Length: 173
Image (cartoon, rainbow, N blue to C red; front, side, top):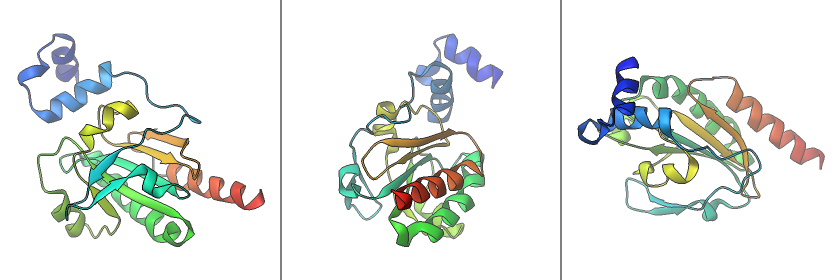
C-alpha cells in the first residue's frame, strides 16, 4: 500500500493498472455520500445486456456492492451478501453486485462461488457519483432512494444489522 500511495501522490497513476488506479482513488477521492443523501440514479447492464436503473428499484431496499474479481476482500464479503440476498429477497431487498474496474470474468466468479444475486457490469461508470474509488464499497439505499448505510472494506456484521434495523423500523411505523 505504501508503494501505491507513493505512486498516487507522485502523479504516476496514468500508465498503471486499473487495480492500482482504483486503490489510488481511495487516497485522493472526493467524499462518499452521507447517510440521508439521495442516491444518484444510474443505468448499468447485466451480463445478458438487460439495463437496470436505480429508479427501477424505487420502493425496495437496494444493496449496491462495488466489487471486482481481483479483490480478495470482496471475496470475503460475498458470502455475507449471499446470506443477505437469501434472507431478505422476499422482503423487498435487492442485492446488486456492481462489478467495477474489472480485469476478470465476474459472471464465472459469481457462479464458481455459488452467488445467486444479480451482477451488473462497468460499475466504474457510476462509482464517481457515489464517491467510490476502490473496492469493496457497499451502499444500502432505502425505499425512498436515500442512503441508509455505507461501508468501505470488510465488515461482516454491519450490513446485515443495518438492513435488519431498517426493516424493523419500517414495520413499526
